Length: 466
Image 1 (cartoon, one colour):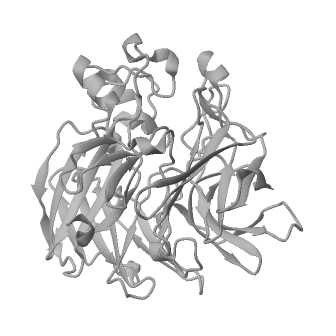
Image 2 (tube, helix red, strand yellow):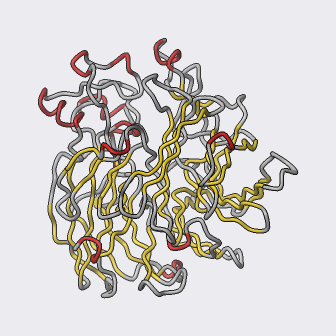
């Protein structure tokens, strides 16, 4: 990829794309628990050709899925591109054709063609393995083989990369932003897919302004949409300025409504300027909604509206409280932790419900970046925190929780994560006891090369893939 590899941080180091699709049996050290059977699927950007934009943004690369299959204490690995229409068109022409966040840089051959990259998350629901990114419909892949099967057309438009799976009803709740034909529109959608995989609702509404709304929150009765000043602007993009930019002078809002209500009932709460890529969870108690989120003072990874560099900012775990009584429309914010954090997770059997145990990637170096070097567990009942830091230069992925069994108590299970070993330029799958994170991994499986930094993933039990 020439000079751009050396000058663009998202094309160098462990951000750099892989050139191969591989199948490996991994060497295990320690012990992979025998009761851990299934696959950790992870995804992230991996551009197959040199991007056209010299300011290529990490979020716009072709999706590549990495699968770690665990059975009887053994681990195998497979990685495959998500063969979207964009990937296939560029493969046919042998070069990049799309402009990423800068539509002015697109090749005319891309006109009228789908630009989806399916690079942000991968979720299993109702028997389907769905590769997701927030600008397009879910893209189905085959469990195990990672064969690309195509878009699930029933969604009829953009869908979030962060749907929520209801542990009680089995339905999947989701949203979309920038919906419609106009780029950077302020139209959003709220949708539901039932436990059988049928899309039963898609309803549009207008946000206060166009913004990147990466994730949202769901309780057993409500949905919450954070609209924060990482704004989108077609006018900026057409002038050669950033399509998405941090505008801290704009207010922040969180829209709240009942899951079974009409979108006309949306109530907009206000909060200070800041940005949330990822919440940990939300639940209801005593007429209030409590949400735990990783909050940045300024959106990282994006410039200001005039194109000048943005701010370095680390996220901290905070508690948001929404008073549903109508007494105030201001979100109460309270700090929960003093450690920079990202990629918060929980025992997903408690999604939308009160819960005790939360997990996240953390940065003990206070470097104010998205590179995390530790995994943390917080006991929300006691406020006590456990941290496992990795070696100098090592970086960790999002930790994913898997219960020991379907009947295990909340938090009794395993965390799986991928660690890039900087000194050796290889990656390990690590397995940790979720209740004893500070003791470090109980077992590791080494990939004989690195796994590039990615975004999200989920555990799929073996019985779901049978």
